[in-house]
Length: 448
Ligand code: 5CA
Image 1: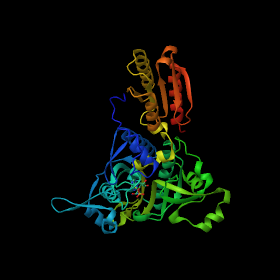
Image 2: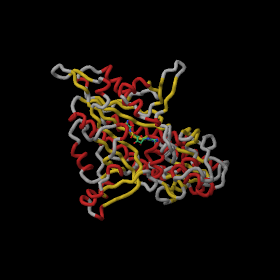
Image 3: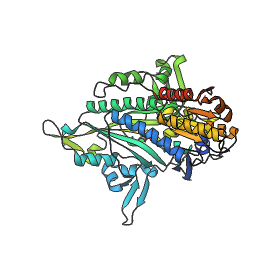
Image 4: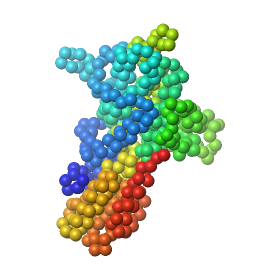
């Protein structure tokens, strides 16, 4: 992609309305544009990141055995009356009336929709277990939408729903999602701690929030320090096997959100030098709630000995659009964003320091082809802005590597390679620059 033809409306000034750094940087890097309070358009740079995050979430859901569906954004009020949640959900639900004066709503979550699907299509215990997920826009009429995409009103969520015959099977389903989440967040370049959490309007009594520790987090959290870089399960983990040792390893040490925090227990269980009390951003939340929806909605199947059994359910959310802001909160410096390679909108920024100079243009074109043939996504800065402005823009948008080519280097056949994260710059022959960047990106993306 050539910057001169792309659409990346960067801002030089920090917008006053943005309180936290991720919101400021997303606006400055031309990733999003607010359309109404808590509602955003995703511009190309933002959309690319959002899609890459969704793809990683999808891969790890599939690996764990979940199956993708796509449910509507608009749901019927009657369905929510079946579970008894229509009145209870309160003002966060956007209630709409259609032309026939039928009550509909913009879904804030999808337990009712999925429970009706499974109720009407699964008859026998032989069809279980099932875990169905979708990545779909949700709407919650938050009292105080703020921090850009971190607390929006319209936001993209991955929501998965598990259906099992027994509570023991449901616990296994819970563990599969728990492990999938550890892998998902690690691949997104995040250190995330699962913490005992309150279940709120979703319900149930077993629940974990997956939390990024960051100063701008909306909630106070408490945990054992060792959990901050705990062991990430490998890709070849057997999701049909017993995952409880992994669950135990991560949950035997203290970790709780403010609502679940027990100060006396924290003091007793965690040595003082291991006590972490910090702000956190919730990027995922998993729930086991048994028959809360399946019982009132009549979601049951025929069991092995013929009688009807009400299904055990859990639900598992990831804030896909919130993660865009969350990753920036966790990874930036004073010059701008520092994308982990796995979600970077482009992997390399190729800077032409003298666009219009035939020899420099030719060298840049050759490098572009070589990098793209190696499988990398390249953003070529072919504009006629001055060098200082180009460097500032590249640092702001945070691509993991920059390859800088000017007339001097062209004479000696050399380019400068800059690693955005470390800031280290090195001059080397063109081919070596390509090899260096290709190897470094592969290395950055690698998670066992
Ligand atoms: N049905 C369950 C699980 S699928 C559920 O809705 N869970 S939730 O309420 O915890 O939401 C799941 C995730 O969506 C949260 O962990 C959070 O990352 C994200 N999320 C929730 N509200 C917002 C919001 N207003 N803006 C952006 N992301 C949000």
